[in-house]
Image (cartoon, rainbow, N blue to C red; front, side):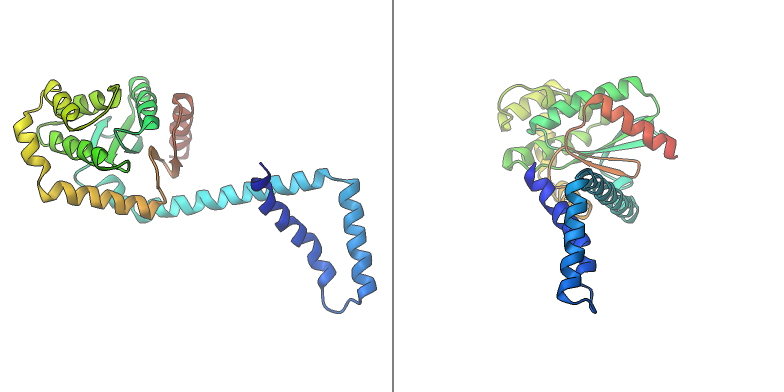
Length: 247
């Protein structure tokens, strides 16, 4: 808590101190002004809280503006990359973009939130970005998912759901078993996983994530908002409603 308060408090102190360091004032005048500021703050400590709240609001607004600008600048890579899986309403009025890693425990929790959203809102379009950040096994799972997509969207979705709900280690053996159970041709999948196209598509997603300041999973883009981290179902619905109101 103290670390969060330190920066705004220092900024506030600098703001109050600025007039006292103005040129043209002698030491006595500066001391008098500083004493007046100190006395006012001691008599009205709530102004510090109020000022910090205003500062926090301004910082959030500035961050939201930067995120909206980054989304606009990278719109083609976000929404029309030609390889990320799209499901839900093809012409939905709100698009939710999710960056995920199948071995990420928070992604597994978010999977439930997203499933609940799609089940309750028929106007949402979901774009899935394969973003394996938790090591070679994560990369293997994402490559397998992208290879499964070559065999059809239904297989991709069933396979992705199987990996997200899988309990235990998601190693190569488990991935291939789940792929087969989801209806994939496992031998074809293993061959397709080695294609340069899949490696290049994952590289493109990494580059996009860097552009957007997404460094972990899950990550979401909803309207003009970038959400970096897990979102429970209720909050996810609220963000979709906010994006819908904004048009």
